[in-house]
Length: 89
Image 1 (cartoon, rainbow, N blue to C red):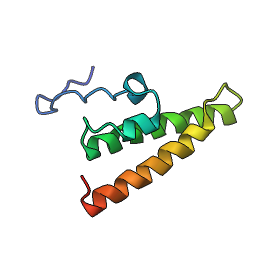
Image 2 (cartoon, rainbow, N blue to C red):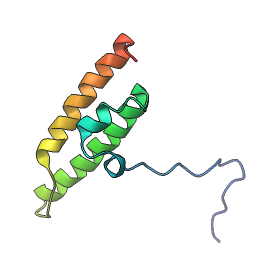
Image 3 (cartoon, helix red, strand yellow):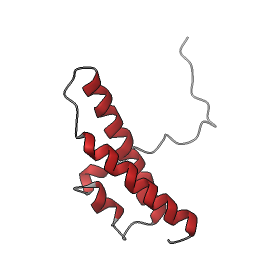
């Protein structure tokens, strides 16, 4: 018997955005003031996860990605999180 979805399960999750589709570089995303600081951080975290996956693929012998991009994303995340903590929104 197939499991039935509970009527209280809620809406399906929102699709994960692809920040590289709307911004050429992590720096461009971090500087995009049309997005609030929390949204820029969220999108950079997505970019970081994508970069980490590419790095793992490269470690496993598959064609990887731009390893310097991962360090750039991590640096930008640190800067934006510090701004958020200081209230520099």
